[in-house]
Image (cartoon, rainbow, N blue to C red; front, side, top):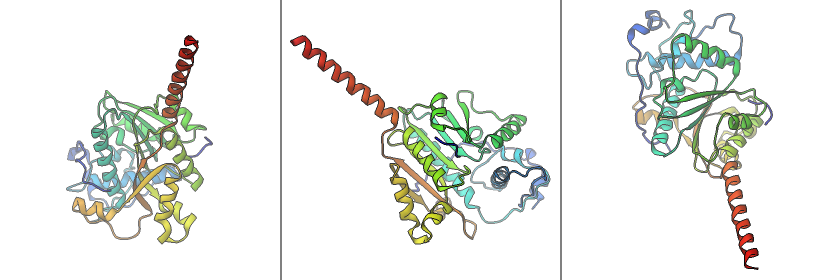
Length: 316
């Protein structure tokens, strides 16, 4: 490829909450509003930092939806935190995705392949309780991932010993080929998460859908947050957005369900922050066979056909 970049209550995510001693008092007493260091002029890095600050804020709540013990390592000590009463929809989505991800892996035999398409500061490889032998493919901007990986190493973050984390730079000229070369197997189940990946154009997102459709087995899930501007740019009329998204996903073999943030909040007994949020929470099921599945069956049919020809020749 060219360079590019319903809700059902799920089991509670297994997490380890950091001790209060790890959270500096200045974080607790400070107001949320991120002020980046002057040197951090990369817009993708700034956006990733902002999302990390939201996860850090949620971690500090008395009863957090999730605990991200590593989000704080990305935040400059000069950033002020303004602890608001309302729950940010990004945190609702993060909780929903965490639970859906782990519950799906628990319920599907042989599901050991996870593909995260993120902003580069996703800490799921380190903070979630992964099943044994899980392989996590992390697709994200290389420069953001490298900085984040160094910070995580500095604080001693580690993935479970029995699991494997493989980074795939978003800037790669052929993501599909690189995933294959790193060991991704289209004849085995996988689950794909899309949250925070910087997508600049509709064509880029369509290319991502094409890649997932080519690699994912029939029945695999693709879930996450879709930027609303992708649909609004194409449709222009909000009332037609859902239908357009349905058609976009179905064109690549996905049946999509759009999840209400308010419904997620109600199921959790929470109240989301007021105002607009420029993302759509979704879960999509892949309805087509992967390229690897099709190739496996092609070879099997060819073998059966050749065996039949040989038997016929022997009878003659």
